[in-house]
Length: 394
Ligand code: AMP
Ligand code: MG
Image 1 (tube, rainbow, N blue to C red):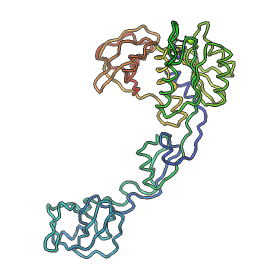
Image 2: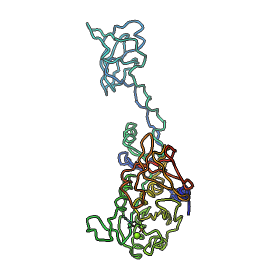
Image 3: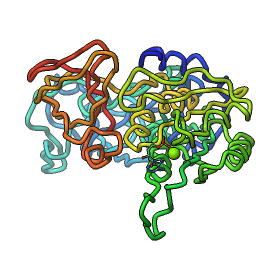
Image 4: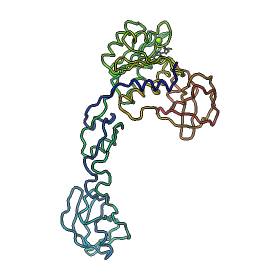
């Protein structure tokens, strides 16, 4: 059995070569930039007024605080006349400050009387309320770095630079196969011995949370030939295959032999952890496969700790590991040495509370949790107030 950190390393070592494509900037939202993007222009592209008011030449205030109205420039306009001494130009937010002016005084501070304009309160600083050309970004600067997620803000930012297309990493195509004769679709009558399929919708939702739409989703009973057929079909369609259930040593656990019959090379099977000990990970050429345990809480923990590392790596994220921090524990916890424990918990900015209901068949506590508390292999107890590593899940 390998350790948690070895498992993460093995996964990172088996990430296939990333591929990229050029997308329209709006469609690129949710993808990761595959190249550094340089700004093709300076922003603002001109000295820009930040206020409705009057544009003046600051040094004119050394002589007098009485100005005459020289003209007007609204947003989108271009004032081209020469600026006379002690001339104030009516200006509006977003407008280009006329050449020769360097300061804008907000209209609330202007006193317009008898055809003249004076300003109060004074003094003000040179450049007040003017956003200088290039103060947001200079031409040639990196506007967006490779490996960053393209968010709605990035779409707006890049469009503001005149960029309409970006090169992004392709997202992996994913399949989900759940197994088990006892597992049935919600909506069907629950007979003794059967349970509803939690894993399928849960994994669909987990993939969607990373912006990935699974394209092959099926439940297969514990029939090895049928399972083999669906594994083969899935491999024709996808880059990453998630199978749940049937990865242990029970008589009906056919997943590992059927994956290997389909040509999968094992990278590891079993991790020194709870829940999720029987996790299987393998590759078939440049495709990845996770044989996840059947119990839903194990499935989700393996998704957060391992599957998401693989998915984020393929998506091109710089940062692929679960977000971690350290917090004092609100309640104590004891365990035997030997396995790392991942415990459903609720954290706030001050501390973290381990929830009751840690068994791997229980999702109720998971549905309340916002993090997992990581208790390393060799630790036997954690007391109230001890710092623990928190893995944020939402
Ligand atoms: P297995 O690894 O196939 O022995 O499954 C372990 C446990 O997980 C058993 O109690 C199964 O009934 C349960 N299980 C397996 N698949 C699912 C599923 N898709 N949804 C809910 N529970 C499941
Ligand atoms: Mg089973």
